[in-house]
Image 1 (cartoon, one colour):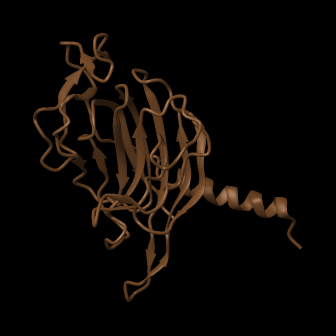
Image 2: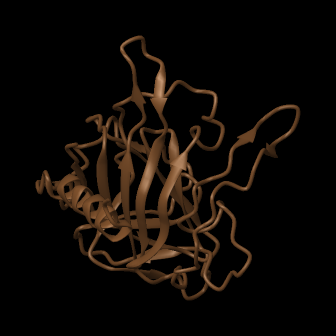
Length: 241
């Protein structure tokens, strides 16, 4: 009989094949360009340096020189939605938030990994940085249905520091009749290089999207309307099974 260690080795080998099947990363925000997104706002700022505002740490300050950093201090800007749809994929992004600020990235526009100023917190929920965001409803009043899936540890850095998020996402599967036969999964999520999710099954979409129809391919959405946030080096690659 096959030993447990052999089974683990085979499983890891299969994951390696999946993750190395396509090494072509697509850069979503090459310097000064938002062509990868639908109707991106012209109010975004491109800069080469970003920092906390010394007078108001819930704000960010950008240098006047243009560069590869995408910056938003205007909380009213719409989210960035990719033109391209993705199935199974990996995402890498680097982000910087102001004190108390909030952002997120939504695979298929449905499943959100939270970006939040959670530095120093010990009682974590899915609302904290790296968490799978909780489900909620508007009516009869805004109410959380669950706590989401908290990160396994708090790997968040202080506001004003650059952080990295690496997400591996496996899309749900459907039969020929369109019935879901496998839930979406997060085989691996790293925050600042530390493993915070290990093979998490996503039973439904997150937030208020949990009643929406799931798909095998859909765009990625980057949330920018909940507070000052900066991004750089956002890239994605599709995975082949």
